[in-house]
Amino acid sequence: MVKNSLISVISKKENEENPGSVEFQVFSFTNKIRRLTSHLELHKKDHLSQRGLRKILGKRQRLLAYLYKKNRVRYKELIGQLNIRETKTR
Image 1: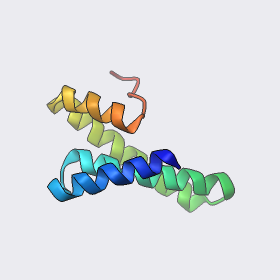
Image 2: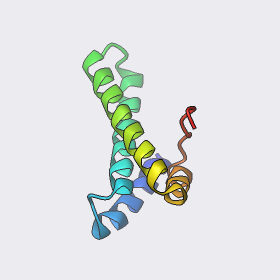
Image 3: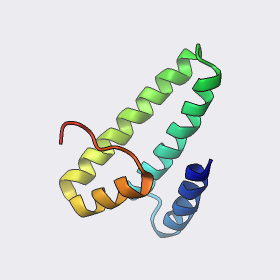
Image 4: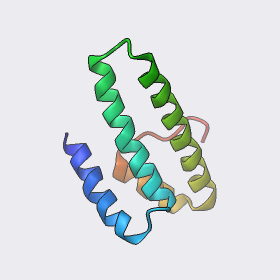
């Protein structure tokens, strides 16, 4: 739960600046991913939520790949703030 509150604080600060930025979109997708993951721990057979989780994971992966190509410093900072792993293709 500490990670979720951290993300919500960061996303509120980021929301005031630019809600369309890549960082804000990755923040919001990460928040959704964590919520869906905790939901799926309770409801293992919820296949529609699993599909939604996979779609959001793909969107976040594409955004991170875009950010990696455009600005690696911002990418590294974002990965560190969100405490998520880098993809294996790098």
